[in-house]
Image (cartoon, rainbow, N blue to C red; front, side):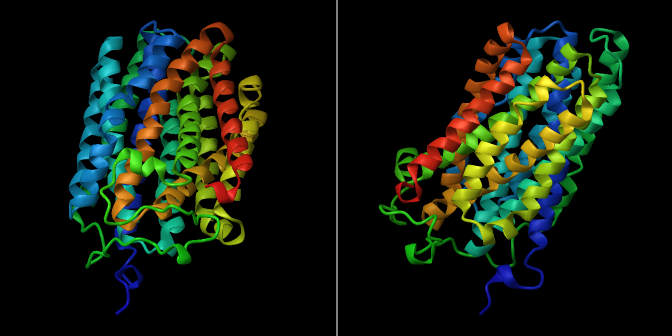
Length: 419
């Protein structure tokens, strides 16, 4: 009997998931840069903005593994994804109503928890329902939806806030709050889509991928047994998992740092919020392109080679925009190049980690990956804020560029057999 993922209607669940991702990530990526403008209006400095950005990762850091184990056990992932939509909408309401830094800090923590629920639910659905040979396609489309949100959200938010440069003026604060309310409406529009069934008609049983059937660049000795109970240490001991986690957190940290600190670079350079929004949108558009092309690229190059290129090229390209942010086309060009290579890395780390563990561990392994991402999202924004205080907000972006290059060098030196 043909696998359910290959039936004519087999991709319907994926398109529902992609539609939800576009809406929720558009709202999320409107909230995050606009939050930086609201904090500036409240008199916050780069260190406070870095701490608030880190708050986004606090709750997910302690709950990611538990949620991952739960996602492996629950038969219906729709409720977990719906909970993510609800928490994202609630956080947006909190950001719009907040009149102090502490309230924004709290709302940012709720925002991160909503994003975690949605992401774990979506990633586990792909790992559960997609055939192994279709994982690059599934993760590529899912993360392309995230990139679409990263393009739409900042551009829409920047357009609403407009061209005014007086951060604390009542008009600008009103525009900031208006954009946050619009973000809430976009986010909760994903909820009706989840009335439809999520997953094929009959669930594909998760099963370990035999080592002989794995691509050569993913195969590793010492693979765990499917009958072992997954925990953090067992997952981290699987060859290649730790290295791919470091790559993943480096790539995600760059997206976060750009979102939070490019508006500050713009303020310093006299670049209007609408222009910064378009530049961030250009980065998101380039990431959409690379993720849609990922199935083609992974057919021509090894996943490991693509991941190394993603780390090194994005780290090198994104050094430039803070230096030339007032030259729109130069900034847009290098953000687009950096965005293209940033876009490749995240779905590749999802596939590499998923295929390195037994099928019954996949939700937990992807959750450990997200936990690593959240560790980076707690530590790196704080470090970036500290660097930005003496060196300016561009220093925060350059710090993350150095991390990307270091991760790429580590993977290149380690070699495929050691992963």
